[in-house]
Image 1 (cartoon, helix red, strand yellow):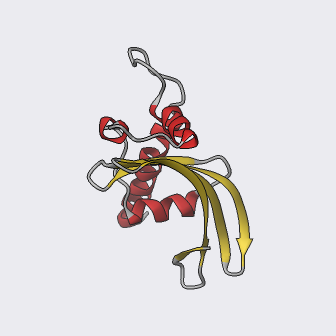
Image 2 (cartoon, one colour):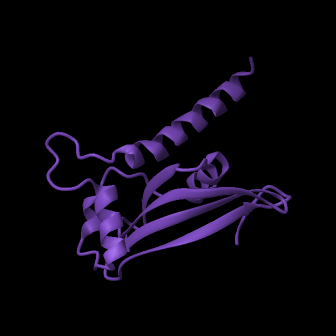
Length: 140
């Protein structure tokens, strides 16, 4: 067994766990007051409410990076979700995969997103990205 492959495999599993765990926490934990952050983000986004410091209070979601986003697309299956914070914790977002389909060059992932941004409010929408022949992903 190649030690580099084992390390890379372990890192991929760790990234997947980091992406999935907060998104799977749909029920409030013991001692947590109020709704869980994912449900509250969805509610605020669908109501188009202002952020009012909501994202700044979420401290346990991983930072969103290009690397984690590409990994999310690569391992995505129907119903899979991820959470992240970005731009110095002034933005937060939850994405849920709603469709996996074959595009001209391979796998495509459609997902619904719910997001809030400090001083900008909350919103929802959907996007799709497809793998290109060279392996990169492109927004459709």
